[in-house]
Image 1: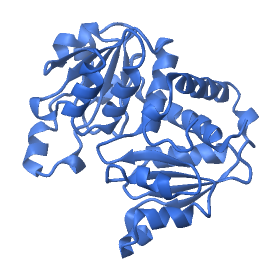
Image 2: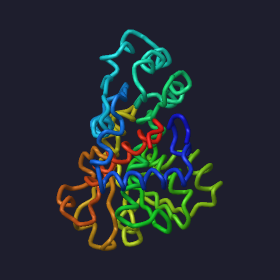
Image 3: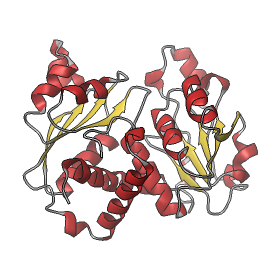
Length: 305
């Protein structure tokens, strides 16, 4: 196990499977883990707003019996005075046993991990990577589908800036029999480096399309994403593309009865609320599972049995 978790590819599939097993044991018997991190402190350094990721890290540490300190936006940290990420992390790592960090700049958590005295978990860096969301996604898929191999996975929406999508493609491409169906407007297709380095170099089975309804019957997993206003340089482009795909109950008529619908949340309007009552909607369970997989990861990185 690596000292820090910056990229999902820092973990082998064996280590991912082990984390999933630990999370499943926590779900079955949370009381057995209630004092595992007594006396330990998690620092949450969130230079970019977040609700679910930050709160699930905090809930994870509290449920392990530990403590939490940190900040939830750059404006409330010394970054607002011009302090570098390296200096912030070097100082904070003297106050905590483990750090979870989100930053708008790609690569900032990697820099932090090189200066930190304690493990650093990347809680999202720009449009680049979000490994704990990917672990959440993998735990959810395993619990809903019973496996992580031989699945047709549809990824829909903003595939260009969606860091959750980039991490999930990297992780699932290492399992056998995965077929990706990449559904997006032309302007929001996956970045070239993922198409070339992960899909093509890895001889991965994939198709790209703009038509969600045409491919719906093939999918075992439908992973919806929001078009992210904060990643656009141009408001007009955002407004033009933001409603490209809206999932409704009617569009699910042709889907498999056991398909699983995932979404990293927050959603805006890309999944109609009438889908929430469908048995295939897995995104609120997914948000809850994020707490359990982060508990498993904290235990692992701290070396707690």
